[in-house]
Length: 296
Ligand SMILES: Nc1ncnc2c1ncn2[C@@H]1O[C@H](COP(=O)(O)OP(=O)(O)OP(=O)(O)O)[C@@H](O)[C@H]1O
Ligand SMILES: [Mg+2]
Image (cartoon, rainbow, N blue to C red; front, side, top):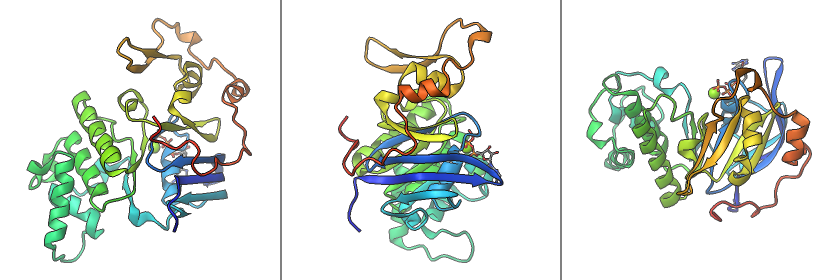
């Protein structure tokens, strides 16, 4: 396999759940080494997109390539933290056992844990700052600490691509910051490509290189500068927002202050937004090398 500059490539991809098309005409490429947010309101198909990328949901049309192969074939090189992680897990496991699952893949049977595996687990837990919690049962840990266990479990197998579905939801500010710091380190020091579903972009803004936004039943990809457009974000969130840059150069996405409730609805028609962002459903996927992350 040749190393491609694109980690994930959608070509006119569509997904159906039940008898409903969730999104369609997805044609874009996510660069290797990028940190990408997936944004969109509830039910627009963000989790669905991650499942399609893992090959867990078949496409209704088009193609989807991940790490150079059809979706699903390279899952061993992908770390995934699902949205419902904290409610799904067996909370009798210790943090250490839970992270080990990321290596052994199963909780059944007796495993002889090798020294090398133990060292990997320890390393991953140190990376996410929970090494001192190794012997705690998950039921004894706070939501934020469990989230870090989940991230450690996803990265213990040295993935090339890390996918996290709303990892910051339910975390307090300090824990959000800590999680973002971990993601920044993984991206910067290990060159990991990262994809994060998020509703609030603010915490992630310093590390994001681009975003996939789900709008009007179509996924689009844009570099960060283009996503941070008040008009687009207002349409995307269905409520009036503005992008504010502080004198220090930090950017924030904020609700517009004192907006009367009846004016909060969509400000732009789909056609207007389409024009603003030149989206065209049959547009070719960017050529390898185009829009490469790391340029910023
Ligand atoms: N198992 C399923 N069978 C049929 N339809 C489903 C199933 N799971 C989800 N859907 C539908 O697919 C659509 C997209 O769901 P998805 O979970 O991907 O949304 P999401 O963008 O992740 O939302 P949220 O922000 O609430 O997590 C929703 O309309 C949902 O009703
Ligand atoms: Mg979801």
